[in-house]
Length: 268
Image 1 (tube, one colour):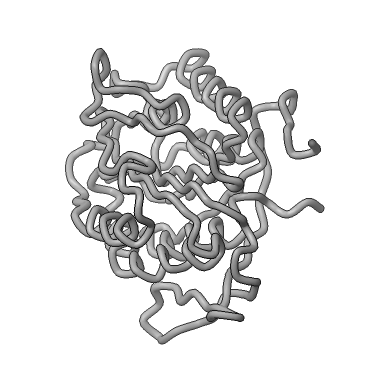
Image 2 (cartoon, rainbow, N blue to C red; image 1 turned 45 degrees about the vertical axis):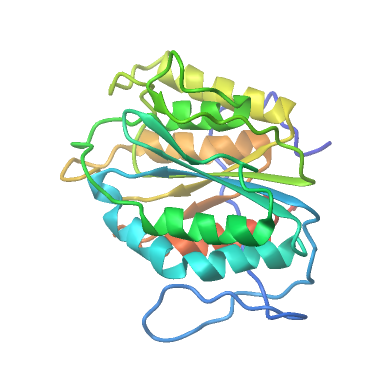
């Protein structure tokens, strides 16, 4: 398959994105205060069954992005319901220098109950701590992709579910470098580990999409390596790359665009 780009360099691609409608032509409304704005059209069930896991950085610098997601949580999950025609499972992982499984994929069998549980899980998220250093984003992805238990890891909660949907969407949201569990980014180590995560995702037909928050890393100078790595996840797995405003506003809209594209960037 053309999107399985195993041998492409660990570098740049800009993904286009568009978004959705209202029952027959659903609509998703972003978080702008100016009122609702449609972001595209599509048919119900166009993605087939959907497994969606969101891996979310919850450090201080992500406060605006998390507020944005809280505000749009219901409509965002309703969008997942629409594109999957009600056949979906949801998971949520948060991370700082430690990983927390907030909701295991498929832990709640009934989609409507899963919808409510996920909305409340998002609304419980708090932005705190972090102090500007690298975060365990690569380990959060590894937890979701490999289905890792907490034992023996700096992790709270087990991720036990097996990915099985037609559309397998793993969405990473952060503004910082991957640093494993040691709060440090080492060239030739953490970047290599991040690439290894994409190989594991490819082997399981999981597309990693990334939402890059171009913030200054909580009172630290921006690091251009962050965007390069964030672009590389979708580059190598066929996912979608999105960027928010510097404040993090637009995070929910970015996730919605990824969902509406079934987690797959358009072939040009």
